[in-house]
Image (cartoon, rainbow, N blue to C red):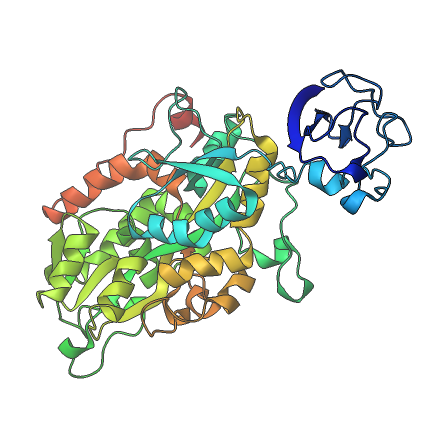
Length: 453
């Protein structure tokens, strides 16, 4: 309680009840204002009529009267009873701000370039806004695998082969019970995701492919329509720009020779299958222009140095749609690979990481990314939502690896096969290019194998 004393000089008239003998002396009234720090109102107190001027006034009574003095009103009439202060004048006027939930954090291993920007627009930024989560992106290692053990991360987008290997090694969490969003028309996730895109520790994201790009302007009597046509050197004598690598090339050679896609890697793991692939290449040997990388092969096509070139689907799309070139993508025998989402088994934000993966693999989010970068979403329901490219007036369905019409003779790339066989098959290719036997002689059979054969 604080006390403030105010001395007021009032001109005395006879009607104010001046003390006897006051004459024309001004009447001095002592007033004390009590201000409650608790906001219960303020009271104005006058000293009792028999108290000397300046004496302490009696406290305010419970009924709100002011001491024992007669209240003074205007023109000498009795004043109205004291009224407590309006509570609105003393109550606090500041409404407590709502408590915002804390901003959470996720560390995501992702990719750069155009695909990384599309992922940011279609998935990462929307999730940050909806879930009040700060996302920190660290770039994937050059080999596309998981970061080293010294790097802390929560969620990563890796190849299906990397996910399978990490799952078997116990490096990532199991996701086979993750509650994924259902597909269109009430389909379950198992029905909506393409084959191979759901694993014990992984949920599929996007697919891209290695295929052939053809310049129809260089063919006067009809262009190649199938993979078998491309490997027919008698009918089509135009140059083929191929990357100097056994990957993709040997698979295409076997499919061009009639091997079903689901039997390619089994065939290629045998000496008979390898010889069959190189025999198919013999028919177009003199029409091949070798390039160190797939990008170089595509540049040879752009420069007119070849009529056919190996290319990756994303880059091939931009050569057609963005650079306005009249090329055609051959989807017969396309070899596609997939990226998948995985969660670290050491993450401290498991529930948040699972929520992100569920969000990132919704059909609408996959379609949003594809509109910016033409990789094929691995959910069939997402394909229906893609529509046109975000900036180019081009319908994307014909250019996506996972469009059903493009998957009729597609081969799922087997990265584990190439990790085991790439070195010897690379030697075989170099030997074939040099005109030598692509396979070394078989070692002689010895020991018990010789006796049982």
